[in-house]
Length: 109
Image 1 (cartoon, helix red, strand yellow):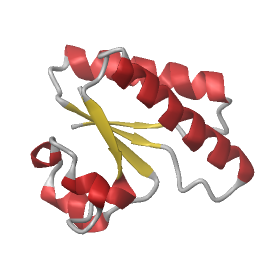
Image 2 (cartoon, helix red, strand yellow):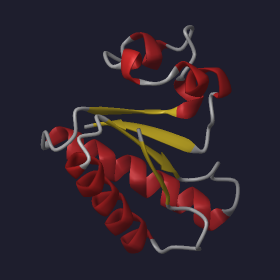
Image 3 (spheres, one colour):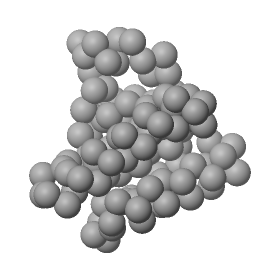
């Protein structure tokens, strides 16, 4: 699993998208099938905008078949309908499932 942190440097939305793109490229070069993007909880106004924009961007990437799927860390719960319909739960390490980090987004490449 390749991990990128795109919430700690007060990025703009454009920079956050760029960093996500670069993380995807690097993860693919390293033959990783899973990317963990740390976007923060969205508690402050800037973080919320970045998290929302990244989720919208990931939706676009999925529609274009550039990524297979993605899921929020907070949805890594066996009772969550999003997790139940998520086909790639087996790719996410068990320790990540236990923490259910709401500031993380797991991207299946």
